Structures are given as structure tokens and as C-alpha cells.
Amino acid sequence: MLALASEESEEFTSDWWDLAACRDLEGTLTRVFFSDELGDIAQAKRICAECPAIEPCLSGAIVRREPWGVWGGQLFLNGKVLMTKRRRGRPPKTPRPEDQLPEIPVPINLQDRVRYRPAS
Image (tube, rainbow, N blue to C red; front, side, top):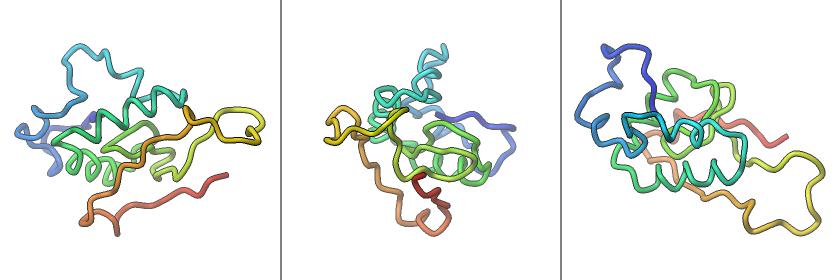
């Protein structure tokens, strides 16, 4: 999901913003991209995986140090990419398949700019 502070940002160009899969002009996907539920996060990541704007979206999120949400296929918390996310409470002895989030690779040219937050 992409929300820019100003249109003058070097990360903003209408060419790719118009192609963003999350841009439905009604805000119906906002709850999916900013949810704590694993199912919603997985859905957001799947949308990003097919999006032609994944690279500029992720780049903009890195520059802005987005506080939370799914941006460019990555889950952000406090300006860093979360490596893993699990349900609240005690983890199950056997991992649930529905709790596995899709892994969306970071574009090669952005890999050195991504700051990861270790799992807690």
C-alpha cells in the first residue's frame, strides 16, 4: 500500500502509482494492508507479489521509514521489515499452514537499504 506525504517526493511518479494494485480509489484494501491478522497480511503480500509497482513502493517505504503495514510486499513495523510474524499467544507445537506468510523477495537493488527487525 502506498501513501505519500507529498507528490513532490522523488519516489512519486504517476506512471507507477497509477499501476499500483492496491490503488482502488475507494480505500477498500486499506484494512488488508494495515491489519494485524495473518490472513490479511498474507493477502496483502500476495497482492504486492503481482504488482508492477512493487519496487518503487518498497523504495518509498524505506525512505519514509513507514511505521507499519505491508509496503512493496514487505511487512513494516517501526520503519523496519519484520522477518516473521506469528499469532498472539503461545505458539503451537506444530506450525499451522495458514499462519505461513508468503515470502516476497526484496529487489536486488534495494537489498542493501532494507533494515530488518529480528523476530521477538
